Image (tube, rainbow, N blue to C red; front, side, top):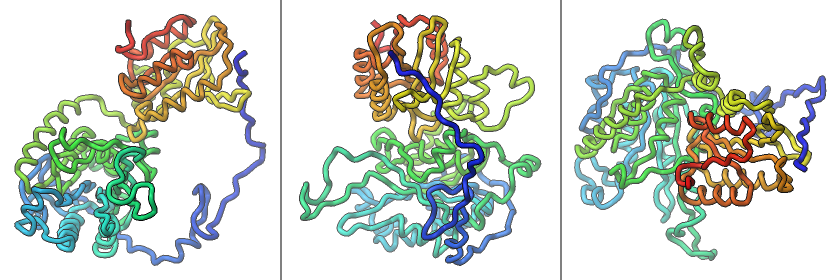
Length: 497
């Protein structure tokens, strides 16, 4: 017999979480936590009261030229007009750079390189609105010896420019289980060398921690004020480790591209729709593409005419994609709300992806839908649904609306789901619960993840896998909700007979 669902025990009445205080360093959770003793050891930062925001001068252009020269005047970028600087400075490494070392705008040494960065960031800081942010993506350099470019950038921003550091994001590009060991000794203590599977994003703000003008006042003045980040994406983006796949240098046509998702997430987190995003090292145009897709304005500079042309071409495609509806987290009211389905309304209002999944399951016709059901084995099932015939459906939800850790795109999410399903007691009877996987990402159509799902279905571990944001999912779920337990629809087109 399948394990019977049981309820988790509620918290004992009258039990109150007591506030904590810093004893040595920090606290695991920050709710009601008094850290004044710890922060009292530091000198208070100088906070600016400046709240002047200037309208941008030039929008949506990539200009050929040296950022230092173009930022030194107000011809292209007005002071106090930029909401966010997002950039990945060039490393000036490789054959083409080596041939031009010490000439023109190419630094001849690492010291000169840091001096160049300092000058660009200093000029850019003048262009930021009060409370505007810089988000600078850097990789650490060298192994003989190791050089922390991230630490040097922190020194520039905090000590030289007196910006307020807001944090350091670790961009995890890969888990690093395979591949070479780079330089060093293999499986020996002689000279093992750490491999780079991460980069850093240093975040700092100008003069104050918050944006200078609050949202209601921005709305009254006709300034950008609309947000474009939903609950799941916000919760993922406010962690300091982001798992995002790297970009292909060949596809983009640049030796050191970063993926669109990286600046797009920073743009969603730190700006409003219609804000100006600046990239003084635009390269192949990734920041501009992200800005267009997220309905922001962009402005950038680059010294290579070929890269400027390539970036402009990429932006054309981004504008076409930007015609799709943008999810925002503002409430929908009035006539517009009455025309939207519960699922569409939940999406529009920026609800958690799991809440949207609950809405979908509630729409399709199941007799009952219960959330977070604890089995007698101790395992918690995301949703337990009952169809009119009494059939039980266990629904395992995977992912968020954020693409930082999106659904079944991560193979380990598939293995975890199949493993959980294997723990459910089955006796080969028609009353056995069926296992459905709901994900926030496209169901894999090839590769190891696809093979794992196929094998799992052969073993009876999974009945179907569905993308909660696809309209076709609703129709498939309606079949299951009607009690058609014999229906075994394909995971994806490749699986069709």
